[in-house]
Length: 308
Image (tube, rainbow, N blue to C red; front, side, top):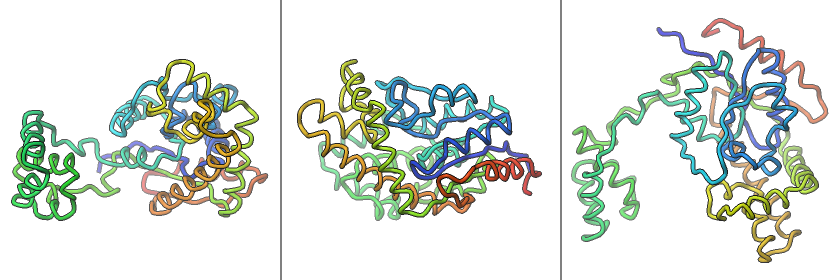
């Protein structure tokens, strides 16, 4: 068996304390932090994403930064993150974007069935001229399992399923789906576990602190730079709620209340996502409790032999 590179990860819901623990672990291990947050990755979006401060970033090298006018897909993240992982001796993933972790957990060659623009054009033309039901009927002939799962109006996925069949002769539903044992890295994943009410209180307090730090001014600066409200970066929590304040569409108090509500809902969805991942070791923690013992545990486990 080929020995996989060990990758440490601090994951979990927003406001759970990931940044503080990751810095302690990184300093002990000589590690470097790789952002696994779909919004922290953007430059100039510091307050609203609870990005590590300049002082914190000076303690440990941090990787992956984008301009706020750039779009960034999950597959692009996986490609760039893997480049960093290969270059860094002790990579430490830190963030709560589950799709990013999932993309890194798939084999390097997953999705290796390429694309063919002419095939896609052919099927899109059928959908446009004859209707999506006709396209769906074609898929039902060659891949009834996928057809049963896909709605006729989901033209993009129906086209992809037909494209895969045309290119490989094998239905998409019969393609081997990788498991976590097929992951290209030896992941050691941790999350801080807090009582739900404590986590939600931390979310509310964090929003209040962000407002004190000048989140509204940060959003205004991005708006004044010419950034579109439709930009991918502006769909992040805090930015999409406060933008209407600047345009006079809503009051500041209503926007802050909505931000707190949406952030609590987001934290709940993150918990649901990560609780399904049996690789994650949940570390009970209470705010105010020192994290040194937790960092020591992580470092001790990191140095255990492969498979230990």
